[in-house]
Length: 258
Image (tube, rainbow, N blue to C red; front, side):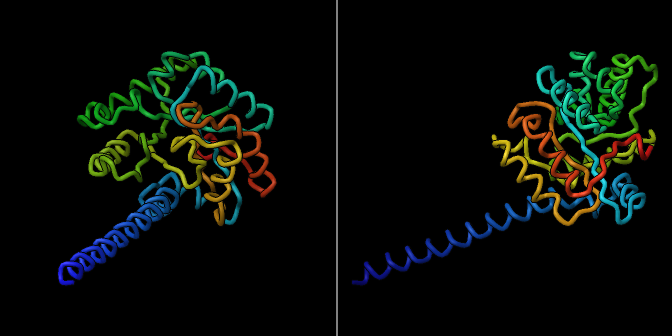
């Protein structure tokens, strides 16, 4: 009986600690997701604060695409944006611009803002040193300028790979913000997304993700990707635009504020 009692006690303790760990994991997951959506409203993101100041009590949507241009997805995105008369902002990767300059030029010629997402999208290279960080930005702007035929092009807006709000490389990102200020660059994350880079979603799931993350917000900075590495936002772009228009949002891009 004594042995049985001790084993039972150990089992109960294991169950208890397992419950605590699971509860903590669930809480952390929710908390992390919440931060991914809302942190930019509270940090030093001066460009986002500028949007809030410019559009008080207005429903404005800034549609942004990361990680392109992509030869199979970006043209589809551009076709839909043209059909819907929506101007977006593209945070391009420099090496992708060098690979597909004609797509970058098309986006620029059609009135979309071409912003900077770094040349390599490789954090080890990006944060290796201050010089590396600045060179990544300069190489990307040079690639954009060569693609669109604008010498000395300066995008003026940078988006950190994985976002400034991501906990990875946080200290180095804070240092990078000072470098951005020195060269007259702003940076911006997002406060609305469809999670197209998280896992494989259906079009209805992508739309529902966007709907959930857009609730109770007047100014939206929407993150999508013009790639199909995980999920393909082009398949739900038209429905996403329709939903936002039906909710009274007006679409703008960063030409409207810079």
